[in-house]
Length: 73
Image (cartoon, rainbow, N blue to C red):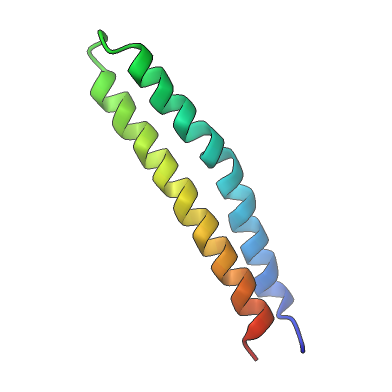
């Protein structure tokens, strides 16, 4: 069983990009909920949700690329 190393490296890069996003997104969302009185509450909340969503997307994409590199011929 041969492993496509370039595709495996791409998956690792996606997972490495997802790691800080997964931690940063909830922190931004928490910061938004602490400052509900500020005028930029909605904007900061939307940015936090977008960061969290992109972290989840990168994690899924990275795992998908790693699995494809191992099991595809």
